[in-house]
View 1 (cartoon, one colour):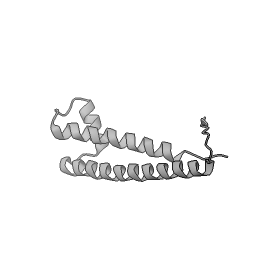
View 2 (cartoon, helix red, strand yellow):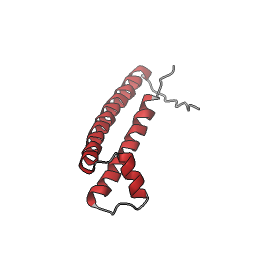
View 3 (cartoon, one colour):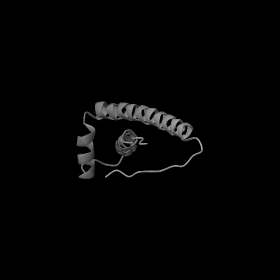
View 4 (cartoon, one colour):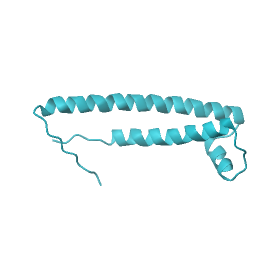
Length: 97
């Protein structure tokens, strides 16, 4: 179900352009963050010869000890999920008249 948000303005077209521009900038920022996070995850995957999914499963099953790298790897994985959700939310926005 899609929710609808109504805004009032003396200049609705200007407000629309401002919001569209802000959303576009945010989408670019989130997309850049996704790229950086994916690169960081790839570094861990290469270093430890594990996919992130395999790492998370092993870590959650207490098969790996806590290390700074592993804590950072988990954090990057969570960040990627958050950024992807944010990107999807922005991309789902549709302006209606």
